[in-house]
Length: 294
Image (cartoon, rainbow, N blue to C red):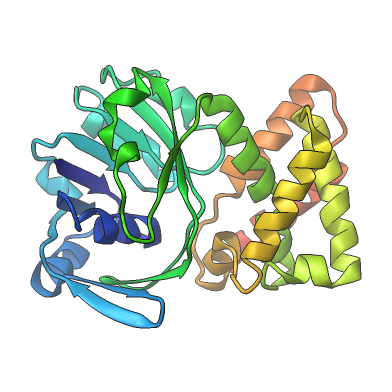
């Protein structure tokens, strides 16, 4: 299968590395410089204490246009999608979107493709440089259909070493589950400057952890709060040594996904007349640090 991946960040590099085991992969990057480096040197994947150089991956700058593919994967941050949509609006091939939050769902309604899927990535990934990515935590990629039959996406039935896929029946529930996890772990670790596990092991941070979950789950009207809380807690412990993507964004002076995550929560709270004091405070803290370059 010919797979196109838009996005040269940690997730784009990780997917290109693993999917190239069985498929022809073309990676579209934001800059021509990164595309040139990957085209000349390949992608270096660090996983399990080992380093592998993958040289069979084609890389192009997004400005060069998108070649004919059988599947197009969008592995960019949600705030990059408005710039990319005009390039893909008329493309008819199946598309898979891998964004955090829920706001990108409104963009998908503009696309002409008859088969559109959304996914949540539970792997840990760290981009070291333009062509090096480290697989820092083994997880799973869950995929659901936004439009079209999920059975038509053969990727979810394939087996990749240390890179599993799973089907989800309802994209809304799937994205909401991930949104709750991201809404609690990412902003707290970003502001406190700690690894994920500290939110559990530090009793004062754990109290904040519980209070933020209660507020977010109330705003989103989570049905089974006990099960949802245990899911967030287990993700936090499974990634205990990881620094969240939001924390890493602030540390590197990059724009965060706070608008896609807590921004969406705040919009929901206001529309429903729910209390959002802690959510609003954390949102402002992250935006404040973001405006100062971290």
